[in-house]
Length: 343
Image (cartoon, rainbow, N blue to C red; front, side, top):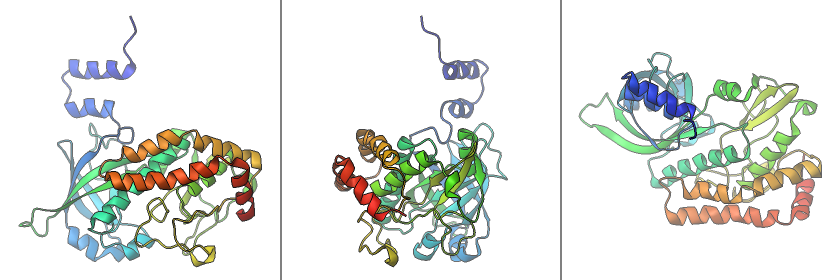
């Protein structure tokens, strides 16, 4: 007879001693290990938060999920999205909340990616960016995990209106959690020393960014930024530095209405793929190509398994990614094209 796994033993002990169901759920489904859509309500001075988005002031909200009510603080965040979005991305601060025995146990400050605008198309873009994060999770453990939410927003300054809207959004794992999970240490530097870069991780990142058609990233400090790197964080593991990307809303896979490539790249639209990585050895890039290609079925399954996307939208995105996999079958040809564009 096989032994029960440790998670099952924990659940049985919790039930035996009559502990609350929220404790059982926390043992079964930590925030970034579950795949179900988490139903959440955020109630607070929503209009005030958005109207004064340039001030980035934290305002008190109540977050309700799984029958738990938590007092949290919200503020607006973001850079480029702050300029183009009617509904900006947010940051949830759990510092004032008693998160013990809830699915948010141990959380501090988390980024919430929102729907940017109130249109169905904007919500679709949110789901497609969520899928991009999940795809990179398949390729590398050095990646930010995400959790899909269905968020009901309520403005308490207008009590007669009730719930204003309900939209998909997703939370992104914090930098400290990624570091603890991988044994890494966050690094803050003005510029990245190439000799310290973990080239195996870098090669996988370069191929992934090419796969999803993302050019809005670099291994140098971006405009109006003080530290390296643009749309990526650095983590030290031993003597090696790992680059972990984030923000994929300008990728071709998402193809948001507001997304345009930088003029210096000399491409007309974000759906055009362009290699922006370093000139690594062909062997490293070949291995990265094979790593990504080996996940083809799982990568396409991420799109089919993303709630809220219509079949026709999924088919279009599957076709876009399939273009890459067809090109990747000619490894030498694709590697030569990388070599012509590498930095």
